[in-house]
Structures are given as structure tokens and as C-alpha cells.
Length: 275
Length: 225
Image 1 (cartoon, rainbow over the protein chains, first blue to last red):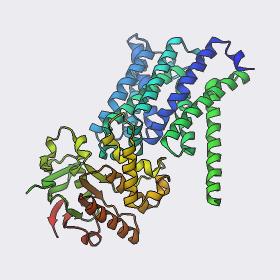
Image 2: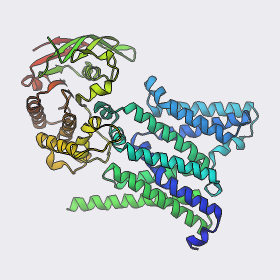
Image 3: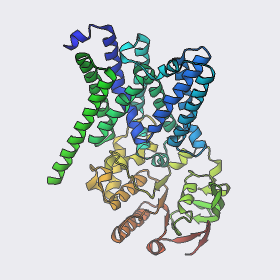
Image 4: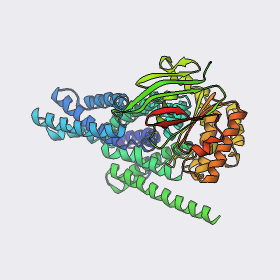
């Protein structure tokens, strides 16, 4: 089956547009997560979204909207609060993660909320995106690309070493908080749109592959976007051709890319040793 | 007399106990001053106070005669202070030596602006002076400990600072690399008319290079040279 045949379906057109945006921009957030060791933050946001969703259901408000709102507020607060408490964002994320999960379960139990309805916020579906969803993905992707383009040198200094960024006279805190905010926003929105499982495929796996073969931060951003795009498009195509779940297929392609990069790096280091 | 750095009876409390308890120190413009003391004496804490990363719970720090606690914008001050941290960058962050040195210019270049030709020229000139020009295309994490320390020194100097703060610049280095880096620091201190404040646990190593030496013990300081 060719791309032309696949793209006859409107839901596939929407999925392809989302992959074009998210595949290019979201892996850049993955580079931030890996360099600043913010993996716990990604889990914390999922649980914050769950609590937000449960509160939304309790208040009879759209749970997606309240989940998103909670994630945005949390990502805005996390940086300054961790600074004030002199705790790393990773540790504070662990605290947020367990606390919000406990609160969500208490609320679900006490308010008699249907569990599956609350957990729905975690399961997105790339094949059921609306035009509004695409606009949101597009806007966030654009924000990420603009941020990386305009503030490349500031981001480079912070990812290299936050203390050095501060020592050379950059407003390090401001940029660190901006990175955390964008991270929270990306995770919250992508959870709604592509599901918790696919976040890793779009955000983390391409960034992991890129760090294996890159020799500069520019290369890391470039390769992470390229791999994000390739795994998204490849996953979408193969899932349709072989009739298997899209999210899992995208992750499978991304994992194969990582394995390829690992082999490439081994071969490269072997060549350098011989030389 | 106008001091470049003057520290008056500072106390620093971290996690409930005092790291510094009454430190006094004076550094005149152009001086090479060392602070020696055992591990855990509070040397790094003192340097963090001087560059405004930590706030003392009591006492004053004056930089160029201005009280640090009165500075509204410490970012402006930090552009005039070059810092060489103690630790190496352990993770495999993909950055070439020339980019790491250029980073010293970032505060002066300004937000959202790309490095100009004169910034690259300055970085190259410093790499030449420090003796790492030949490594400029290599990745920082591929270098030896001594070479990485020179990269950190070059980055701090690329900032064109008035004050240079060095936190144990010879730790983790073998004795020949220690002497080499100290010679480089001392030469550049004179060539660039810097005011240098260095902390070290090795008083013998820094003695021949220092105009003044302070001993830091149990959170208190005393002038020993």
C-alpha cells in the first residue's frame, strides 16, 4: 500500500500532520530531559494530569482541560519551588508524583468517579485527532522551535552546566524555568493528543538515539528531530500496512533507530581505534 | 585603601550548621591571593559567596567597594568575575573545546544574539595563550583532566574578567600537570593584570605564586603570608 492510498483517509492525514509537527519539535524537549536529568518530571506530569482530570470530573468540567491546566500550573511552579526548598527538580517531581496520585485516588474513591473515565486523560490516540488538536500541536511545536533557535547559546550553556551558565553572566534561572515550563506543556499536551505511551516515542527515544552519534548540540537537535520524524512516519506507515497498533509501531521503529545508532557508534569508535 | 574584594565577618549557614563563622579577607587590585585549608573547611562556600551564588547569613562582601547585598542585578557583576569550578564536566555533553571557551563570551554577547567574529577571535587568542589551540576541534570530554582544566581556565578568561576565582584548579591532576597549570595561571594573572583569588588544599603548591595566603580552619580565616 502506498502513502497516496493511506492518505485518502482524513484521520491518517491528521495523524501525519501531527507527526510532522511533533516528530520534529518534541524530541528537542527530550534533549532537555536527558541533559538536565529530568526524567522524573515526565512521570510527575502524568500524575498531575490524572489529578487534574479527576478534579475536572468532580467539578463537571472537561477533564482534559482541567488536566492540562494543572500541568501548566505545576510546570510553572516546579522550578521556583525546588529552588526555594533547595531540592532538585527530580526529587520534587518524585514528591509531586506520589502526592498527586494519592490525592487523585482519594478523590476518585470519595467522589464516586468512574476510574476509567479519569484514566482516559492518559490515553490519547493519534488516529483520532481533530483540527483543534492539530492547531495545539502545531503551536507548541512552533514555540519549541522558536525557543531553541532564538536562545540556542543560552540553552547550550545551561545544558552543559547550570553553574557555568550563571558564572558567565546569563540569567540561568529564567531559562531553566522556561525549559521546565515548556517540558510540562509539551508532556501535558502530547498526553492528551498521542497518549502517555507515545510521549516516550516522540520525546525521549529520538533524543536518546541522537546523543549516541552527535558531536555537538546542534547535531543532537538535528538528529533528534530527524529520528522523531522517521520513527513517526515509519511507525504510521507500517502500522497501517500490517494492521498493528500505531503507538507501539512508532516506538518499535524508534527503538530500531536507537539500536542502529548504537551499532554505528561502536563501528565508529572501532575505526578510530584502528586509525 | 580601595580593595577589589573585601569580606567582613561573614557567616554562612547551610542545612542548620555554620560552614563559615567570621571570615575576614582583603584582596587588592592585581593581587594573587590564595585561601588554603583542609577539605570541608568552607573554601568553595567562600568562593560562592564572593560571586554571589550564596548569600551570607551575617557580614558583608564588598566588590570594587560596593556592598554585594545592595547589588540589584548580580548578572552584571558576574560578567566581570571569571570562575573556574573545581569539578570536571563528567557527562558526555557534546561540545567542542572552542565552543566551551566561547561560552565565556555569552554573558557579554547579550541575549538572542549570535557570537560575532571578534568573539571567536577572542576565544582563539585565549586558547593560544592557555596552550589548547591544537585541541580546539576536539570534544571536551575526550581530553585529559589537565587539558579540561585548561579549557575551564580559558573559558573564564574569555569573559575578560577583572577578577578570577579558581576553585582547587589542580585537584585530580598529577604533580607535573599541577605545576604546569599553576604556571599558566600565574603567567596569565600578570599578563592580563587580573585580581586572582584561588582556593587550594595544597599550601606548598600555591606558596610561591601567592602575594598573600589565608588559612581557613573551622570556618574562620587568618592571614598566614
